[in-house]
Image (cartoon, rainbow, N blue to C red):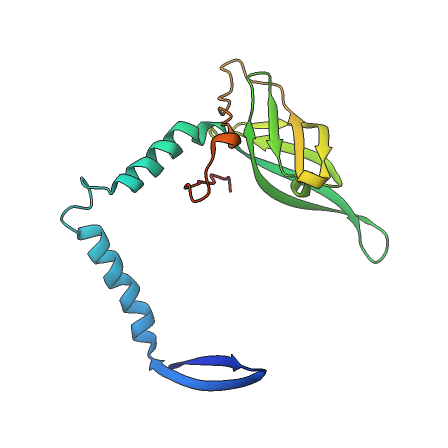
Length: 171
């Protein structure tokens, strides 16, 4: 059995109380039941909500311009031997010349950079510049003959508080 406990803090004091017991069967079978209901719902296949249709449309329109950035940083172990460490993050293609924007924290101190596009092709990348205060970095790859799919920039001056924003990343 698994016990769920809630800890409430009231005016500097902690109060712990037991809310309920759940068996392992609950944790195993309830998600499966939810999945069955979700998948077998009568309107699921044909009747997406308008918001879901919009999310799908945005993803399909932009996914090919989103890339995976892999950075290799050389660290030293306790004997001062070089040890490569990898990190990953997302980026996006901004033009057909091979420029890619990513976050500065993804590439910081990297000794080697690679970019993988939506087709799985991997490119060596060069760091062009960074704006650490904005957590941005600009990379350059040699574009393939078949070209790249740059993402279209929006105009943030036209945004209003409360508008929906989607973030599409890789991974």
